[in-house]
Amino acid sequence: MSKTFKCRHCRRWCKRNPRIKGVQKYCGSRECQNARKKKWDHDQRLKNPDYRKHRRTSNQRWRDKYPGHKYQKEYRESHPDYCKENRRQQVSRNQNRQTPAIPPKIVKTDALTSESVALQGLYVLLPYKKAVKKTDTKKIVKTDALIVQIVAGTGFTGGLFPNSS
Image (cartoon, rainbow, N blue to C red; front, side, top):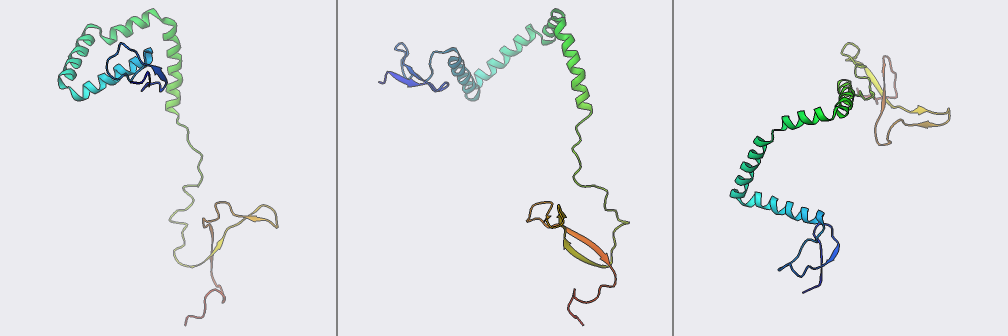
């Protein structure tokens, strides 16, 4: 049998305890032992209905014996500075909750209304380019996105459509 093992919690190589019979999986540090006990308790609650029932009744008896509201009341009475600071912070939290941060609008939501839409007409779709300098033109968004400028017009003559008659 090997003289060392790798702890399942802290992942360090440790010397085996010769007093432990069988395979040692956790080292002797308090944190690792607590992790071992927590895992055992979790496994027992999943597998063993009697253990689960016993834990539930035991916890209920403890809650009946030590009610939470009494503990909180006693704590607040014995820590007035904490209560004062907590009240001040709660006012700030309430204000933050009441005024949510409104993200800036990227697009004007009411720009297009049913009254302003021309239902009939001839439209020319042209790529919209933003001119940084007179000679330089750049698109506003990604190059694979299509941004068009819609120009309503009447009386376009020739060039757009082949003679369809």
